[in-house]
Length: 214
Image 1 (cartoon, rainbow, N blue to C red):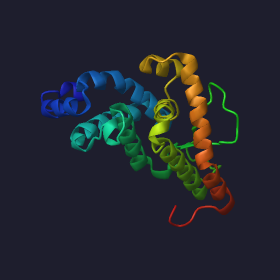
Image 2: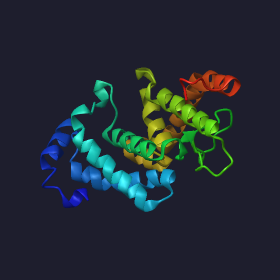
Image 3: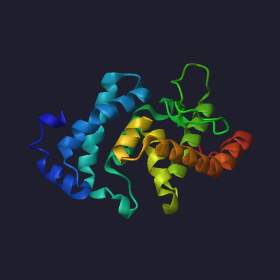
């Protein structure tokens, strides 16, 4: 456990704070429960989710030199760690993990995320269908992460809501922005993403995936 090995990671923790301006142990304790909850939606195994979360924080420390701040074209530290954790899950579960996908043509209610979770292999989906789900998820995530600077406010709330699974109220409190504004930004952000990816997703539905995509 990281919190039992602080002496061994003290130098890395100092470097983490220099790069992110965050105290690592406070960051770890604040975000670990949220990350476990997030990963449990993939693993459906709380103990495994905790193991993955722990590994993600360790990898974040070991790779802190590679971290890019938002003003350097990177992401917030918590988003960066979530991405590390997601890659760990993908490596462990490959295409059989529950990965985000979407139906962009439906109306989104307050309690409906842009991204949905694909279930484990239950015999209802072919291997190719899983590849399609994964590819669509990657397209949507890339569209969110690559929103232009003029849409930065939408990028931030979409990452928090759609990729990190944060509640509207939690986003509001975290950003110190009133709830109605947060909801409005998420609606607008979703609309922007739909316009960016609809043609690509429709092409996949129509033509399938190439060998390169798979």
